[in-house]
Image 1 (cartoon, rainbow, N blue to C red):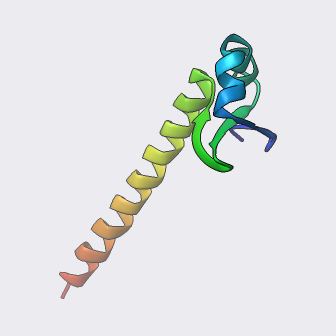
Image 2: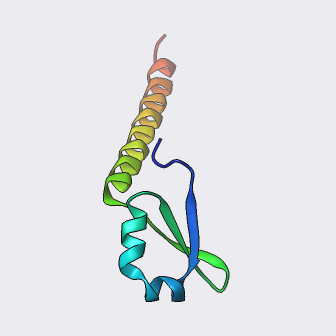
Length: 77
């Protein structure tokens, strides 16, 4: 699991005032920044980002394998 499903949501203006603490908090949980009440940016620690990207790449690899297997079985007489 990348995160423990706890996400803090704050406004961009609040984040501007306490950016260094946002960075520290993002090491433990995702921080969602809102502008005009709508989410615009997620701040997360680099380790969590890497895990997320690895998971995404693994999912893409599995999809590619499935597509290859579909094409391969169509050509078998």
